[in-house]
Image (tube, rainbow, N blue to C red; front, side, top):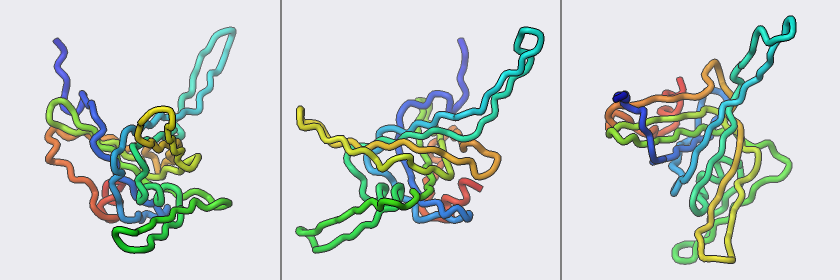
Length: 192
């Protein structure tokens, strides 16, 4: 029987933390995406094969970045604003508040960091972080009028390495040894 080490059996996304990345080593205040459902990172490589005398004799596979997708139930206003650089205006008072979000046309999308927390079946936790993601599209909002289903928002983007690290992966044997970054300094410390 093969014995697995701690952190090798992750099974459920537990939390997604999002913070604006100012691309100068500083970050905005992190928020937790309410009802996160999916966080996927797919490393992308430049590849090439060199031929010699009718066969492949050398190969290149150089990691250059990661394709990323994010999905959540409902629409998390705060995370949406960070990820899209939208303007947000809150007016009125409870119970008559109104929140306006206006994604801006003609402006470059901002960069943001994501830290995903995935619990493991041995009381540990797996952490996956990306320092500088830029969405390729405003999150799609799917509202289903054919059946009674909650709205889902999802988007894809690209994670640009800010140094030599393609992505940040950490495993903790005991979940209580991990602390979700609560401020901009803690986000910067995670990616340091």
